[in-house]
Length: 614
Image (tube, rainbow, N blue to C red; front, side):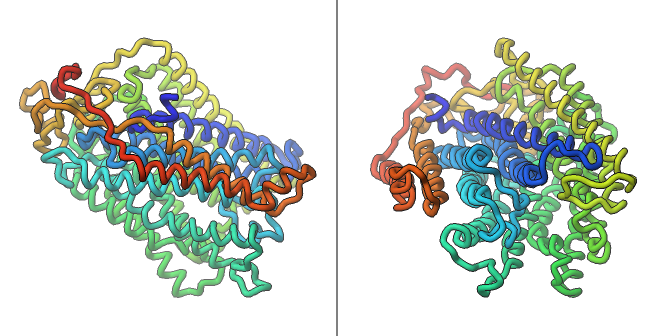
C-alpha cells in the first residue's frame, strides 16, 4: 500500500524504474522474436500478421513505455537532489503522472490477450490504422497512448515548475548541473510537442470509434495531416530522449575525469539550440510524400544544422576527458562508448537529411540502423551509465563493477553486431518491415550476424538483472559520496532521508560540492536554520484517478462491439462502463479539490543529519 500511495519523488523514481524496466524487457523480447524470424531467409518462425504486431508493439513499447519512463526515473531521483530541493513542485501531480503512464501502458499491452495487438506500425499511419484496415488492436494504441501521454505531459510540466521555482539559494540558471539543464529543455519540448500527438490520436480515435472522416480520403479527409501531427511530435520526441542522455553523460564524464565540464556555457546554449531546432525538422520524415523541393530543402538544411550544436557537445566531452584523471568504471565505460556510437548515428542522420539521398534510403534497413544507433547507442547507453552512477543514491547499495563490466562488453559488442551490419543491408536494398526475404540476395549472412548480436545484448541485460538481484541481498551501506562527486546529491546520505536536506544548502558556484571540497569544507554551508520540515501526505487518489481512466478507456473501446452476454452488451453499448470510469476519475478530482491536505511536519528533534556533509 505504501507504494500505491507514495508522493515522494524518490519512490516515484523507483516506480518509474521498475515499470520502465518491465516494459523494456517486454520490448526486448519482441525484438528478439523479430530477429529470430529474420535470422534466415524464408523462415516461418512467426506468421506475417504476428510479425506486424511485433514490430508495432516493439517500437511503441520501447519509445513510449520504456525509454521515456527510464528517463523520468533518473529525472525524479537526480533533479530535486541536484537543485537542493526537498521534493518536486507538485508531488501529487508527480504520482498522478506515473500512474497514468503505467495504466496507459498496461492497457496497450493487454491487447495481446484481448484479440490481438496493434499492427499498423509504431507510427500508426492512416489509412493503415483507420477503421477500414487497422485491426481492433489499434484501438488499444490510440486510447492507451492518450492516457500514457497525458501522464508524461503533466510530469514534464511538474519538472519544469520544479526547476524554475525550487532551486537552492545561490543556484542561478548558469550554476545548474548539466543534467538539470537538459531536463529543463526536455520538459519544455514535452510541453509543446505532446499536444500535437494528442490531437492526432484523438482524431484517429474519432475516425475509428465514432465514424468520423478526418483521415478518410473518400469523405474529404487527408491522411497526410496525420503524418504532420505525428512527426511534429515525433521528431522532438527523439530529442526528449537524447537531450537528457547528454546531461547524464556530462555528469558521468566530469565526475570520472575529475575535471570541470569543458565549455559549460557553450554546452548550455548548445542544448537550448538543439531543443529549438528539434521543432524545425519534422518534415524530413516526409520527404517522399511530395512536399516539393522548397520545403524539402528547408527541412533538409534545418536538420543538418543540428549537427553544429551536437558537435560542440561531442568536442566538449572529449576536451573534458583530455588531461583528466580518468576512471573507467562501468558508468564511464557506457558514457565513453556513447560518443563514437552516437557520432555514427549522427553522421547517418546527416546522410538521411539530404532529400535526394533520402529517396534512396527511405524505408530500407539503413534507416533502421540509423535510429537504433541514435536511440539504443545513445539513450540506452546513457541510461545504463546513469543507473550505475546513481544506483547508490537510489537504493543505498553499490552495483557490482565486475558484473557491470560484463554487462557493458556483452551489450556493447552485441549492439554493434546487431545494427552496424544493418547499414549495409539497407544499402543492398533490404526494405524494413518485411517479415521474410528470398535467398540469394546477399542478405543471409548479415541477417544471421545481426540476430546473434541481439542475443548478446539480451545476455548483457540478463547479467545486469543478476547484478541487481545479487546487490539487493546486500545490506544498505553505500557511502554518501562513493564517486568523489561534484554536485549536491552527493552531500546527503545514500539513500537520502524522506526530506532530502535537513537544511537547504547554500550554493556558491558551479559544481557546488566541488567548490566546498576545494576550500577544505566537510559540509555544505546551510542557507537556513534547522527547523520543522513540511512534507505532503501520501494519498491513493492519483492511483484511483488513473484506474478510472483505464476503465473509461475500455468502456469507449468496446462500446460499439457485440457481446454474447446480455449484461456485458448493455453495460458497454450504453457507455455505462465508460461512465463509471469517468465518474471515478472526476470524483477523485472533486475530493482532491474539496479537502485541503495540509501534510505533516518532521520536527528538528527527529532529524538525524543536521547538514549536508561534504
